[in-house]
Amino acid sequence: MTENETALVEALTKAVTLHGEGRVAEAEAAYQAVLDIDPDQPDALNRLGFMAFEQGNSEKAVYLISRSIAVNPENPAYHVNMGIIQKKLQRLPEALECFQNAMALRPEDPSNPCHVAETLRLQEKYPEAEVFYRQAIEIKPDFFSAIHNLGVVLEEQGRTEEAEASYRRVLEGGGEAAPVLYNLGNVLKDQHRADEAIAAYKRAVELQPDFAEARVHMAFARFLKGDYAAGWDDYEWRWKIPAFTSPPRAFDQPAWDGTPLEGRKILLHAEQGFGDTLQFARYARVVSGMGGKVILECQPALKRLMETLSETEEVVANGDALPAFDCHAPLLSVPGLMGATLETIPADVPYLAAEKELADKWAGRFSSFKGIKIGIAWQGTAEKRGTQSRACPLSQFQPLFDNPDIELFSLQKEIPSEDRPLPDGVADLSPELNDFADTAAIMSSLDLIISIDTAIAHLAGALGLPTGLLLSTGGDWRWLMERLDSPWYPTIKIFRQPREGDWGGIFDQISADAANWPG
Image (tube, rainbow, N blue to C red; front, side, top):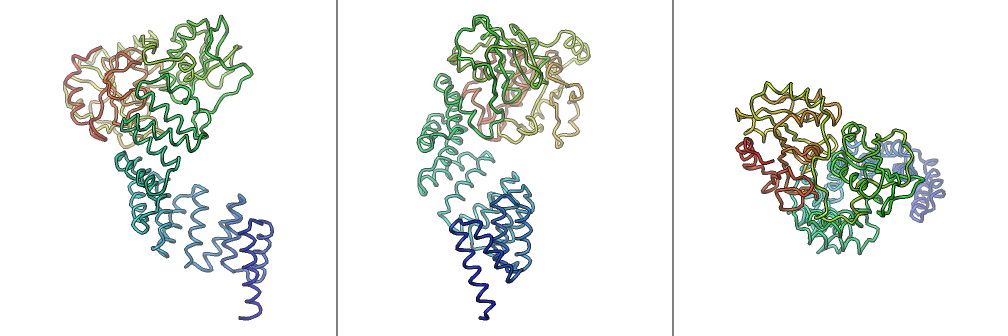
């Protein structure tokens, strides 16, 4: 070994040692000293690059590790590090290519197909991800992180029983872990095994007391059973979930504690989705009955409709200037503050109404249709598509298409690209749907609404319209478990899948019952 080669080895060994000891600045200088001797030393380039990534300088990391790969493309570790960085930068196709390169170079390493699978999972390519997780497990049968993640992609595909088996395998072989217990709880809840789900969530919380997601989903499992009183406290943990869709609001005025309001003005502010606001807006009347002067803040698309809600002083849209108020509460916290139970749900409908002028206009436009006029919604909003309870293939409506006594009207504001053009006989009303007041006017002029679990179903229920709700096997907590009616909406009839993905004879039944629908 030449003197220069010896110096290079010693310098690299020193740099790696310093890096391993966490002496970052010294390690960085030591790696640079290696590159001063040999500017193309690939290990130094790779390690210095990953150090740059750890310090938040991803572009420098990409540059340095690209150089290491150019010098030695046969080292799988370089490709893995590049993949990790590209994944962090949300460059998923590039990350996938890096991990595939590493797998080709070292197919016997189970972490490589696992990296490929994880990237495919992030791209929502769940069947493809499943293949590579299984490949990793075949190489290493006790690879418990891969078995856990296999459960996740099986769950995403609606294969809850198989996902459950994966999670149980991890718990039996790899020991208890809060995230695995949480995921087990979720698949048990989706199978309506609520007590077992609660037990799993409880154990997750025992292991990790600040596990907000587990506490909230434990509340959902209790709600699913109809045990509302036991769930409200845990539901308040939603505000501690980092990815929660509605960040907590901060006001100078105090939060309401549920006591009589005695003429005070209270701001009820909407959270989460349209359906949540439509469902829980009913509590404005209850709060008013407790002596409150209610100001309701809601999503702009709901403002015009919410102005028909009785016993509110004012309705304002999110983002608009707020009037003076004395205290406040998030809308979905109100029933918990009141100690609401299944038996005390204020279920008088309608509590919302269509504007008379708009409804009369649509009644006139629909007067030429002689059949049973049915409004349909088969997909949730774009960000919720693919969730099991919020999608039903339009092709499943075929028995309704084939019934000559039925006229169909799409209530979708967004028509999925795969469903365009709509089948003959389905009127596209999307150009007319500017906000929910327009939708309410149209729906009020129809005979029947058929919808999956989306805001359309909640709107129909709040308007007191005859409605068929299409519910998957893993239906949301608010529809309870086995009931075919709803304690929230007396005019809704629930049609539950007999098994995941199987709509069976549901649409034949709807078609046959349409003329004599109860409600």
